[in-house]
Image (cartoon, rainbow, N blue to C red; front, side, top):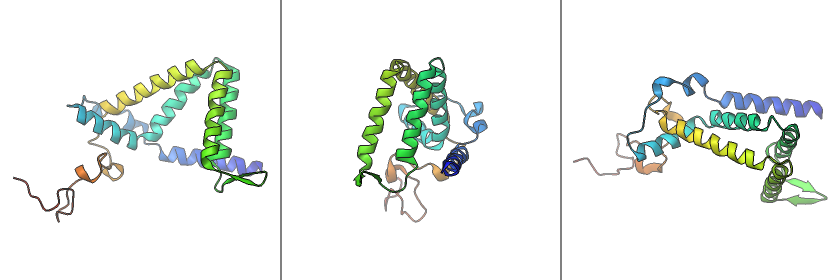
Length: 182
């Protein structure tokens, strides 16, 4: 049992590390420029959040860990709640069964969200955590708006507006249909 848990954590950590984009690409100073319009900023934010989602998540978790480091009881609660999320939500493949009853994923999610909020309130770090997450989201959105998207791989960048603004193919099968430019 312990070996399965450790191997599960190891596989999860390896998949997260493999999904993260290189930090050199993420922090490339030559790719930083101000967007030309609000629409450009919105497109950049959407594409960068898609492309660098793991990097942004790591930054938010790191900021939250730094904020909680002065409260050891909060760190223990944070670890316990994280383990509960891992075992009750992320690591299971079949539905949760308690006393012979199958529990819906929505019920598990609501329970875990309530447990998370309760642990933040009981340990007295909910204001600090909320402030830290708010600051982290501000930093993430600011980076995503300022980081240009010209050098990103286009395979995982779909138009945030669906087929309406997707590239037009040579056979006029794209968003413009049979219309031609003037």
